[in-house]
Every structure is written in C-alpha cells, then in structure tokens.
Image (tube, rainbow, N blue to C red):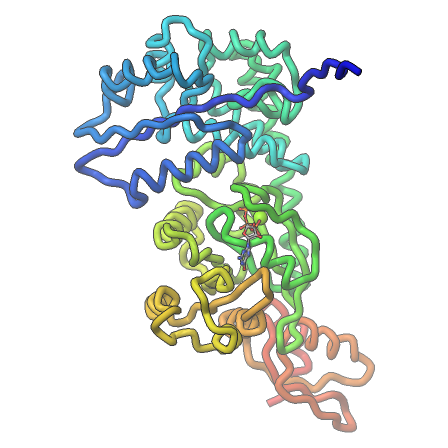
Length: 455
Ligand SMILES: Nc1nc2c(ncn2[C@@H]2O[C@H](COP(=O)(O)OP(=O)(O)OP(=O)(O)O)[C@@H](O)[C@H]2O)c(=O)[nH]1
Ligand SMILES: [Mg+2]
C-alpha cells in the first residue's frame, strides 16, 4: 500500500550563523569562545539550528558593520554552502549597522539580529502571565522602534501577520506583537505609551501586595542567580511545589512566591524570578522593573550559583553587576553553590557533611568555599544541604530582627501565634498573668508587641 503523503506541520527550523567580536585591547569578563557557546545555547533554546560561526578579534569595532568588511564578505560567501537564514551577532548592533550588514547580502532574504533580539524572543516565548507578556512586549517595541527598516516590514508581510507567541514569524519576529510590525512608528509609540500605563498599574498593585506582606511582617527572600543555575529547582525542593524547571535559558520569567518554615519555625516567603545573563538587554531590565522591584525590596537575597559551570565565576560577576544596576547590591546575601551532585566524584560520605573542604576531588569546591566562607554547598535536585542553607538564611535574616521579651495575657493568645509564626521563640513560660516569651521579632512587628514588653 502506498504511504499517504505527509506534510510537515511545523515550520522548518531556521538555520543560524553566529558572529562574535572581541576587542584586543579590552577583553570581556567572559572569554569570547564562552560567550559564543552561550549565544549558541540561546539560539537553540529559541528553536534555531546553528550551522556555523565566526569570531573576529579586532583593534576597534567597525562603526559601519561591527566586523571588518573583509570578514563580512567571507561570511556572506559562506551562505552558499551553509544556507543560513539568520545572522546573529553576539553584541548589540546599532540600527545602522544592522542595515549596512543586510545590504551586504544584496537583497537576499536574510535576517540580521543580535543577542538582544534573541533574548527578547526567548522571553516572548516563555512569558506566561499577563504581566510578563506586557513587559516583554514593551521591551520588544523599545528594541524594534529604532530598527523599523525595510527588512522588518518586508518580513512582517511575509509572515502573513501571524500573531501570538510562538507564531510562525520565526526568530526575532515572535511574540505578542508580530502583526504590529506593519504598523508605522506613530502607532508603535502609542502602543508603547499604553503598555507603560498598564505596566505602571501592575507595578502599583505589586507595591500594594508588598506593603501588605510587610504589614504582616513576613520577611521575603529573593532567589537570584544566573539563568539555569537551579533557582526554580531549589524553590521546588524547599516547598514541594511544581514550578517549571528545564535545562534551558530563561525557563522562568514570572515570579512565584511560596511560604517556607525556617528551622526555628519562623515563616518566610521565598520568591523565584527571572534569571540574569551576561549582557542582559537594558530594555528588559527597564521593562521588568515591576518584577525586579521584588528583589530590591526583599529582606535577603539567596544567590544560587551553578558551580559545575565552567564560567561559574564570570556568572557570579554578571549577577553581581546586574544587582548593582538594580540598586540591590547592598542586600544581605546568602550564596548557595548548587549542583554539588554533578561535581566530579565526591564520596557519598562527604556529600552529607557540612564541611566540603576536603581538597583532592572536591578541590574546585574547596577553592570556592575559601573565597566565600559563608556560602552553603547544596544540591537542589538531590535535596542535599537544604537544612544548612535554611539555617544560614535564618542567621542572616536574624540580623534584621530585634530581641524582645514579652508577657502576653491569655486573652490575647493570637499574638503568641504571631510570635511563633513570624519571629523566633527562644524561650516560653507560663505565668499567672500570661505567656512569657523571650525571642526575636521582625522590626516591623515592634509596635504590635510594645505594650506587652517586659524587662
Ligand atoms: N545535577 C543537578 N542539576 C540541577 C540541580 N538543580 C537544578 N539542576 C538542573 O539545572 C537545570 C536548570 O534548572 P532550573 O531550576 O530550571 O534553573 P533556573 O535557575 O530556574 O533557570 P531559569 O529559570 O531558566 O533562569 C535543570 O535541568 C535542572 O534539572 C542540581 O542540584 N544538580
Ligand atoms: Mg527558573
């Protein structure tokens, strides 16, 4: 029997060619090869197939085309063989450079993009909530507005105006606003203004929620870190939840907050949010301000590091730089060195000890611990070291607590519960006149307990 003819139901995978430039005089924190590997992972996360790449080391960037004219000609020539559809630069291209590079292809149907466009594209695919979508859409328009060239309108028509995330527009054109590419600048500006108003509304709501939480006195611990470090896995492990975890970049965009009991019994909120990356587009930071404010206003930061990653040190610096940019670099921070299980053979007996400085096989970890003696080594996936981590969080959080001794009358026992839930009870006794508690409470609750204070 002849096989029925079949047709592919998904659009063919786009083929990408990556281009990286390194300044000889001013090398980046990330070696260019590592940065290019990351760009490749970004491209793959975005569903592209990478068919080739070129790196050029230059004295200075070519203002017209970023890379040299000769190099560009070589890349153009390679298209014959490699049949790539997209050219992706590791650094952000100026709109003029983008146009100039397009021109080198002599009217051929090719997209010239950069790392920023790729990250925006991934964000567009991964946003789940209305807030996330609004923020990504704003960032996309801010990026596209100065780049509304012939190419964009041309491609916009070509995709038949397929709207919605994951649409058929292909890389650089996906997201909530594909169809909008055909709109002129004025309309886009109007849309940007509208998005800003909407996002501002969301921001106000978030602020309101935060104030409410503050009144309740529940401290907030924000999990931060490089993308793919294991932040969501950690929150899942701490709370038995089911947040999306994946071996891809920017799996999480929308913040999730969960209640966690610290070893002392004190309740706190842990919140997991968008990860950071080297060269995180400024449009994204600006658009995600509402989300990122959670980080700024939290009590403690929990910085998760994938210490098995060859660029772990560079990733730590990139995260620290982003935190600085956000104005959150002076927060009390707990470092968690994650993926301990994936380190080269650590004997099982050592895994469960708290002291990992055993030299030899654990040397890398030993070096890390030397540099960050207060860090806690964990495996979020195997649930190792979590108790120690929570104790460390408690300790750091405790420095924001105040010592207090109270006698709570028996007609106000709900305050005893509050003390247990939100503070740390060190001793509890019963006297004829009420419950005597010695312990620590968050500063925010001082007023509530003031009238029952005893010396
Ligand atoms: N071996 C090992 N893998 C881990 C561990 N924790 C997380 N992973 C893996 O690392 C990958 C990323 O984990 P996620 O929890 O999604 O990382 P994330 O930091 O939330 O990443 P984004 O949301 O994409 O920024 C997944 O494949 C996890 O299974 C760990 O302790 N050990
Ligand atoms: Mg995540």
